[in-house]
Image (cartoon, rainbow over all chains, first blue to last red; front, top):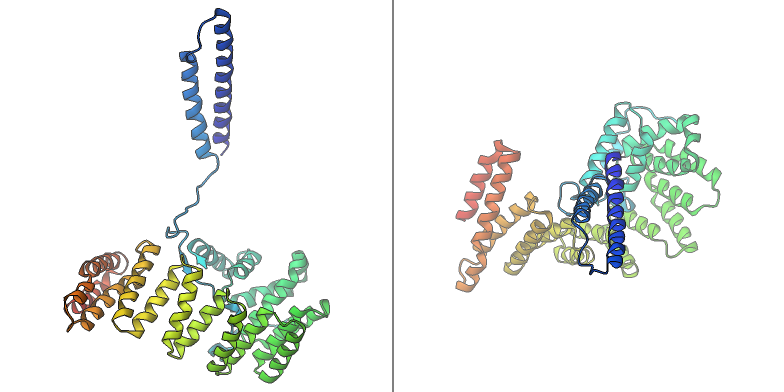
Length: 104
Length: 303
């Protein structure tokens, strides 16, 4: 979990650094009076690396994903709850008192 | 409804508790949450906590819930003295409580003193005429005394007021099935499927009842509901697969003398698919019984 968190932080830092570089590049272009078509190659590379790191961190950091299929092995209904409000005490177990003598 | 993860958790905790590990309080809370009926274990370990005053005070305000749980478990295991003592303690702490009044009436029921219990419930109902639990206890009393028709009457009256209560509908369906009034039981299961269509167990029970009633339309409907169960469980319900095979052969038998269009209802592909799935499952889980299954399926297809 810790590694995912650290990687996520690094990814976010890389993305913010790419944003800052782009803003500076635009400022430079404004001085040189050229058009701004797309950020420079190194910024694009930085963006891709930041994207990859952030995605990896987002998938590893939260931990185990829960299943959403209703018939998957964890979610399937095994039994309905025994209706405890209609429970009767008149059953055959009445003739078998518990082995250990319970005192209270 | 109990899911597989919850069941494994429950079994794990149960093993731990039975073999002397800790975790008694988590086990008791899980039993309370899932509403399962494990009275002996609850009684044994609940008493071990209650008898030890150190552990008892460590629980804080949950102590009284534990008293209630142990009292009910004691009544289920026929240790009426333990139940009496628990209720005495609860009554000393909460002298005017309706919940304790209900427990006392429950104890009278467990002792078999039906008239006193009836009187106690009627007096509790006067104070609070819309109490669901007390109405259900009256039904349970009628059931315990062996008067299913009276239980049905009470339950119908209860359901006219509280139509959304799944447990009550289930109980009514089971009473009808035990009295062999299958059409009414089918109606109850239809209500259950309407309110909770994603639970495969209701579809399965409804299909069973329809198959029992018999007749061509009911058999076709039963096959549809078995197919719905298989859909909802992802093909893992053995009972539904067997149901489809049986329905198929029963439909073929009933529509033997009829004309071509009814014969088309036989749907042989569905039956052979279900048979293949069944054989595969048996090979995985119980290979010793595979021969039994194959011969049974063969005899079904022939007839």
